[in-house]
Length: 213
Ligand code: ADP
Ligand code: ADP
Ligand code: ZN
Image 1 (cartoon, rainbow, N blue to C red):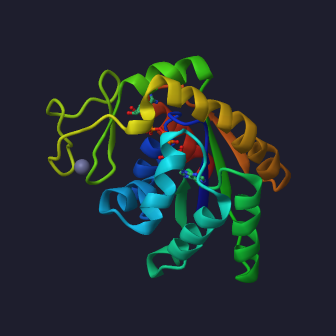
Image 2: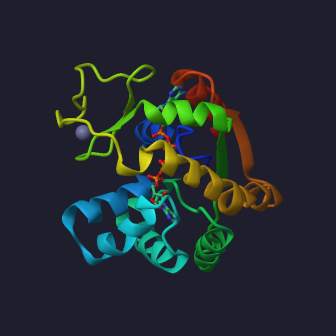
């Protein structure tokens, strides 16, 4: 089963993808996490991606597609995967589809976690992330068991560089302009589903599960 998570930055794609991954035993692939890991490790890819991310802009398609296609060719992706934050543009979606077509495969579900812009700004200000394992928390809605520390790996949580309000505004504008057209793209393919992302984490998860069957 191959799933694409759609939705604005901060809609809860990562949170849901993580849960789905453990429920269905599929790898959770986040291009944002891959970029952040590379930035932390100081790789060439990280250096290239950083300026775009800090500005709240998208990393160029060519680079992003290359990284993603590489990752989905790994052995653990044979039974499927959950893509979180990819594709973010029509050319990215087309590149993925043409690669899948060669293998006689396709995306089975595109799940759009729908949250209005007003809620996004509020949500992002409370987001805390684990720089080590990528787990995400929210100070009010999804707090870690111990204040400021990751439940999964005990690392101290941080505020992401690109979660500053000005950058979030840019990211939302980029989302509406470049990513939202994917709604039509996947609708035409008959795999598009939307869920109300303003509900609590468990309720959103239940709606997604009922779609996947
Ligand atoms: P969020 O969880 O808020 O949606 P991500 O972690 O998915 O954010 O992405 C963070 C940043 O990484 C994006 O703002 C963008 O700069 C870059 N990025 C991630 N995925 C992609 C992609 N598929 N195409 C281009 N840039 C991407
Ligand atoms: P995305 O991957 O789409 O950028 P995240 O999964 O990182 O979004 O979620 C953004 C923020 O909102 C995080 O702080 C997360 O803990 C919180 N969050 C996720 N889902 C919900 C929800 N259903 N209700 C309230 N807060 C949520
Ligand atoms: Zn962690």
